Every structure is written in structure tokens, then in C-alpha cells.
Length: 374
Image (cartoon, rainbow, N blue to C red; front, side, top):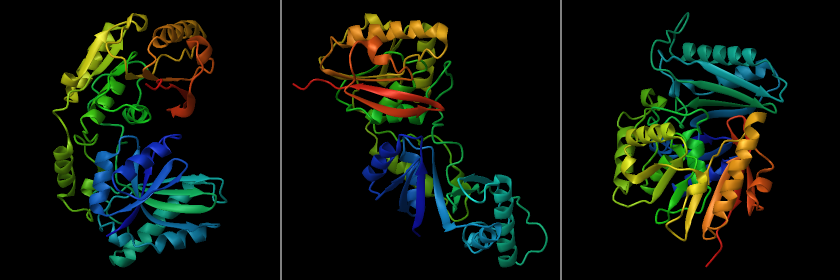
């Protein structure tokens, strides 16, 4: 059966996720923070296992205009809930309302829940409360500009939770955000890749996963595994297909460096957990001491932003060191993420391109310095 599906992601990464889905063979439609596509049960599993930059995959049950709570109740009740939820289903309802007449989120949640209960009770000829002792089906009702969308979350814990990060530093990047940074570059596996401020190693690990064509969801579970309408073997089938597509023999030139030896040890632990320690060289090294061994390559860095006043000077000194070293590497493309709008002054060069991204709640810019051709 074909379903309308939607992948959600951090603001600014819509094009990255859309491209991933298109490369998987899907036709997409993009809105703010969402990329829509169609697929069956196999595609639900495949999108969850393969998407690197997305947060979660939702199955859309219906969309309709609602101006009153009666509208909401009747429209929700009319949906074919019994096709998805068995009698004993536990179905917590999360609600959001933005720029809509129905702005009370607790009321939106409560009325949606009541409508689903009434529909299932009538179909299953059940009096009184539903048991809700079975598998969990996370329901979301989202109302934006009076348009309600009802969906089931097929993912569970966000897709950034790959399962390999056993240790983290002070301000770690989420795994899906780190993967998106790599996907936004011109890197391909036969080029050197360098992360000079690697911290807990997330960017380098995600680059290695991309280089080996390893699906990011290979070693985790998803909420859809418990859904009665999903075939029991579908996840294992998709994971087997993904493993067959992996290229574990390719040799990668990936290096993650940090001035802090303790962070290098943490990065190695995480890479080992991911099964990728053999593919990444981690080294204690200051930014200013880096010497490239190749004329071409790609640098992706998430240096300290200097959010506290006492840290700004240290951060800008680091940016200046980056500029001094990297300007001597014209064949390398450099992608540096920071919230410091004066980054270019400290770095000493105007970026080829800037891209606004949100690292969690922090608005940042990805400063891109493209390699010179030839």
C-alpha cells in the first residue's frame, strides 16, 4: 500500500534531505522543515535506515482545514484509524498549533485523542475505555494556518541517534547535522577529508560512513517495528540490502584532529563503537601545526563559537590561525561553521558562499571557501 510520508529536518537542511530522497529514487515536494514523498511499508523502513540528515519519518493519515473544535473532532474521527491501530494500541497524542484559530494545544490534543477513541470503540464494538496495553503508535496533530495534519511517527528516538556515540564533548554536533555538513561539501571518497576541531569525532565518523556507503540506521531500532500493519521481516530485509550496498573495502583518507588529547581518546572510542576506527586517523594537533600531504582535499570544521565574552578572543585567534594555514591550501575546499558573524574578518578572507543553518537553537553560518580549479 502506498502512503504519503514526510521526512522532517532542521531548518536549512531541506535541500540536503530532498537530494538524499531523490538519490534513493523518490519524487519529493519540499516545505519549511519537511520533505514529502510517497512509499509503501518497505519504503518506510528504507527511509528510516538510509536518511542521514533527517530527524524522523512520519506517515500522514490526513490533512484538512479546521476552524472549530467540532471540525477537528469530526475530521479526525472520519480517518481510517482501524487500518493502523489495533484494539490494544497505545497511542499518545502530541499536539502543535501555530498561527491558527485553534491555538490551545492541550485542547487540540485532548479532542484528537477523544475522536480516535470514539472511532476505534465503534469499529471494535468496545464499551468503556480502550486498554492501550499494546504497542505504542505515537500520533501527532499539527495545525498550521488552520490546516491540520494527522500523522504517526515511524521513527521513535530521532534519527540522529545512530547508536555509536558512547562519549561526547561539551558542545557536540548531532550526528544528522554533522552528516549534513559533509553532504553540503564537494567531498567524495577518493579525496582527503580533514576535521581540524574534531571534538568527539562526529563529523569524521559521519564522513567515513558516507565514504563506505554505510546506512546510518543499520544498528538501531525504530518505532515502526511494533506496528501491526508493518511486515515483521521488513526491517531486516532493508538492513540486509543496505549491508550488501556497503563498500567496506574502499580506502579512505580521513583525519580528525584536536588540540585536546582527551577529546581524541573520546573520538577514538566513538569511532570504534561505529566500527570505523580503521578508516579514520585521529591525532592531537593544533590548527596552526597542520601540514597537508595532498594538493586537494576538503576541510569541514565546527570550531568553538566563542559564545561567552571571555571566549570570543580565543575563538577569533583560532579563526585567524585557520585563515593563515588554509589560505596556503588553494586546492582544498574549506567549510567552517560558526555563529560569529565577524568570522571572515578574523579568518582574513571573504567566503565564496555563506549558508544559514541552525545548530540546535543556535543560528550559525557555514562559511564556504571553494577550491581553485586546476
